[in-house]
Length: 344
Ligand SMILES: Nc1ncnc2c1ncn2[C@@H]1O[C@H](COP(=O)(O)OP(=O)(O)O)[C@@H](O)[C@H]1O
Ligand SMILES: [Mg+2]
Image 1: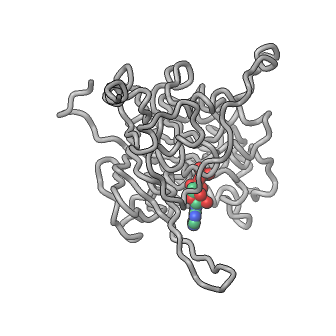
Image 2: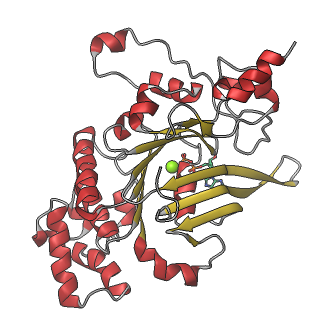
Image 3: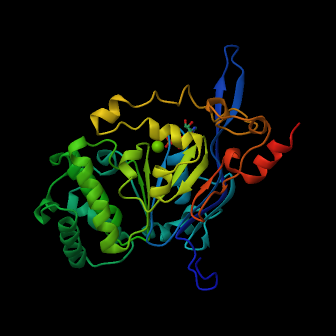
């Protein structure tokens, strides 16, 4: 346990966070109907100083929306978002702007995040100049240093993005995100669009930067195999909620939520014998639409262990085993088990 008096606030924190999108659609009669997409639906999450937290889950479960909401790139519908203890929930853009240098984002597609008309050197210098952190000469030196740190020749500062490969462009996008020494970086599927051969190199770069700058980051990925080696902690998301959280050793080695177990069963093994003997994926069907109203556990329709209580109550994220491991599943809620036992 950390000392509650001296403990620094988490770098980033979501408290009962909900992010909803209203979507309008016309039916065949031409009538307009509005539905609510609950992309993030009650998330409590803390990213501690110096930590790499991996956020994993299937496509569409709300990872990007959560990451963007933590940086207040999305409006908060309910709950709160804090950054180093400061409440960001209701701040408007003018109040968020001075904080932006401390909260950066790396996107999946490095090409769309780099301005094709700007030279790499200009792109990298921009955050330093915009926030008044360096003179032009200082910025030039910092850019050269940063390019070297991310494994590129400083001479490339004079080139435009199209001159680079996907992996090199992602190195540049990462350099831009960290050049102003942010205290928090959200990396949203930063290697998913890259060739397999360069994915490991970019993961190594994240590890290197984390040590060098004591970086705190949220690493979003739909691929569990990817986060295994770089995460200090793992949070598994399903349909707008965190359903399991813990160290990589626990979440990957001893997962308790049926969803996490199913996700892991679906990861191909590098060992051909194990791969041949791999059980059929347990995860069948699609998750419900985030626009539908759900009663009970949101995973129950796909769960092989669903119990009567799962149809009526929504399991909260609660501690299981050691104090760093939690899951939102009645199979592991002590009270629930007792309730079940007491039923006739
Ligand atoms: N701007 C938007 N308007 C309406 N629906 C959205 C918007 N952005 C995301 N969604 C929906 O919210 C849900 C979560 O999306 P997203 O956060 O992108 O998931 P992930 O990153 O895990 O793939 C999806 O159902 C998606 O279609
Ligand atoms: Mg996404």
